[in-house]
Length: 93
Image 1 (tube, helix red, strand yellow):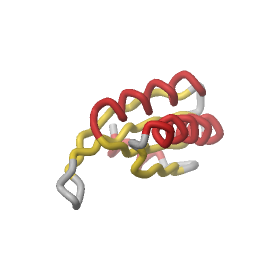
Image 2 (cartoon, rainbow, N blue to C red):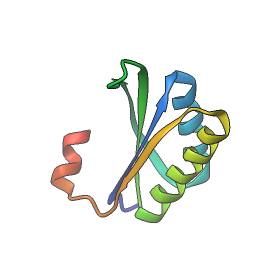
Image 3 (cartoon, rainbow, N blue to C red):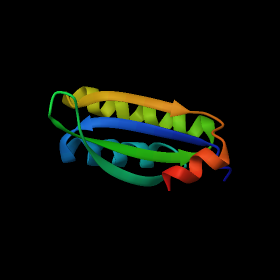
Image 4 (cartoon, rainbow, N blue to C red):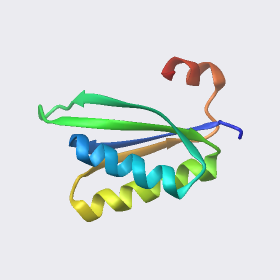
């Protein structure tokens, strides 16, 4: 698998992060890099799910995670970085 893309799904709370990761990993051939806790501007706890894989797979996984979170009212934001430089990607691992 050519890991040239990274995707990020930010959600409210631990349950949202688990839902997002579960749906994303089941929907496409991607790897979970990590889940990171973030304190947002509004002082609420949010978590970011980091995924990596091929561009199309990451886009599909992020879309799947987003849909699952929107249905549960826990969605915050998503972002996909296609064709990420290997040097920049190494900072995230």
